[in-house]
Amino acid sequence: MTKKDIRKIYKEKRLQLSHSQKAKMDDLLLIEFQQLAIAIPSVIMTYSPLEKMNEFDPTYITDHCRFKNPDQVLVYPVMNEKDNTIHAVSTHIDSSFELNKYEIAEPVDGEPIFTDIIEMVLVPLLAFDINGNRIGYGKGYYDRFLAECDPACIKIGFSYFEPVELISDIDGYDIKLDHCITPGGIFAF
Image (cartoon, rainbow, N blue to C red; front, top):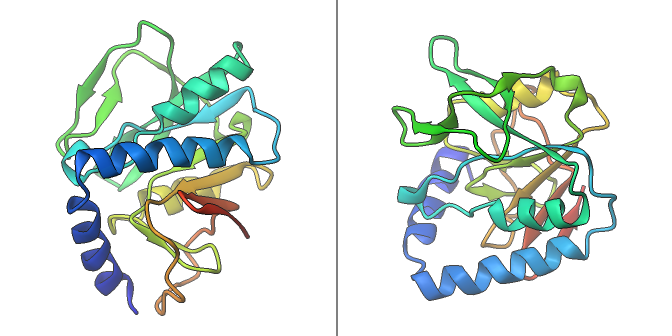
């Protein structure tokens, strides 16, 4: 299937999840993440979930990481709509956030950081395939950003659903995940 077809199907599937279904799967995603055999890094890029799209809230993961590594620095993306890019901004406990035009909360008082110090990126997605390719919302923000990160940076996605067999129109700009976590297990690529 193509990105466009998969995007349409998985947007609808996710919107059909009830609050209780989503809450149960959020717990299972955290449990699966806790089984991942990686050291908790010091610099993690996360994201603010798109609530209107019933997106997974990575706060479950970052709270667990902070418990394991209290010195961690959380980094959030800030969008530049002029060139469809994002840049990384560090945050602190009192950081203020404002909604951008897509209704995504972004930090307004963080410090820009270089991508080479980010050790792990929690990558939003709608779906993924068995090869580690992901589908986002179609603008390419994360693919452009991930291409600038250190190759050792761990890229992790979280999906409420199992992978599709194949995304047929992957191109050279698409950046693969290292892991994708579902309520039923961990996929490593």
